[in-house]
Image (cartoon, rainbow, N blue to C red; front, side, top):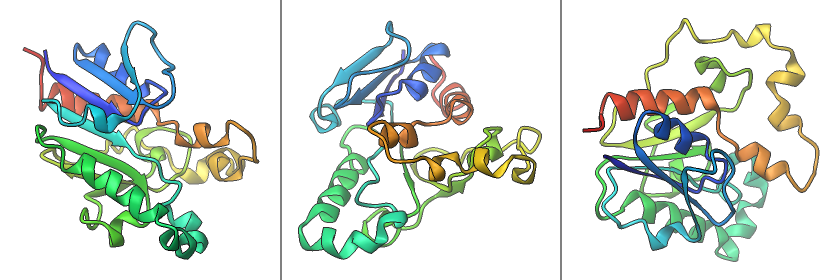
Length: 204
């Protein structure tokens, strides 16, 4: 049984996709878990478990202080140390001591130019995987191949109504806004599990 950590995930979407294929996938977040209640979740600081001997780590690190959409606040966040702390958190996961297969997910932003991760390995749109949504998403990948995009599953964004395609950007202020915008896409999660799990770390 291969052990996979899904870091900074409360939704259980990626965790459950790997569990369906027989992996021992564990999510970890400061928030309680959604998704299948029978699957494993650690509620707490992911840095407390990051150096356990995981076979794979996929991390959906918070983008609040990193995303280019908030660049007008970067000077303030650098001055008070919030951005540096956010980058240090990501780099700590990227440099986990006992894992050779790591993926960091984040929007376009400071990680590309202000962290040791450098340019992202892959950039995709969710509609390329069959999701009816747009959000330019970066992956920094270590020890794994890029996700293969099947053109047969891709949706032409021109065929999706504007408000539906851009619903994440158009979402109004609410207590749930940050959680909903951070929720990952099930079809992309399924491809992560199939391509990185079943093909790279098949259960034994």
